[in-house]
Image (cartoon, rainbow, N blue to C red; front, side, top):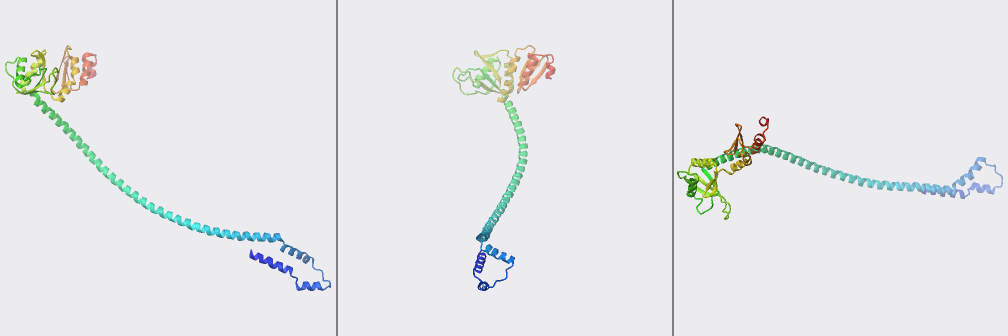
Length: 323
């Protein structure tokens, strides 16, 4: 822009100052040769274009635009360079942070994988131990069952010499061994004294007027106990002692009593049925004889089905269907 202004200054000063030749020509009245037509037309045209304000204004604006454009471009270039450097630095920082985080995550993932492998190893070991323990538990369950059955059998054998007597009024000395021996001799009309080792009532003391407690007695021999129980079953009628009804029955274990009680309903249904004989065998087996066919049951449900379908409501194909 400064160069353009100097150009316009130089051209304006040269156009206003007359040259020596022009002064001389003005003082010399002699006519000069006519100038060529081309020169006559060029001089005024050049002078008008140089001194045209619009042209000067346009050149100045163009120069200003170029200068401003150069300045703006330079400033923008510097600003972009600074921003680019800052952005580059930030990107590098982010890359470094991501790299560090990735390394940390990779380390954590490796640790998790190691933990998972350790857990899998422990689970495999525990699974093997569980399988082994299950086998041991099964063996122990079988052993416990065998021991329970053995204890049940031993307890049952120990109770073979015992009898139970119910319905005897509770009075002073009514449950002593001597009193029980006298009771058995009187009720069953024995010609000898039955030796009773020990006897007592079972259960808590009851109030006056309540049903008397059961007497459990240990006889001197199993033979005496079997004889008394056989007489009680074959008596045919209700036993009475001093005017009161009594009952004499075996001293079974709790499990045997419960198992035998499961057949109570079946036995009730078979009672007084013609042509039917039944009985409970030790420890808890129901034997039923019908039309010369003998059946034994340890399951009360199966016994009930047999009695209903064959004895109570017989059908022609019932026997074949059950068999």
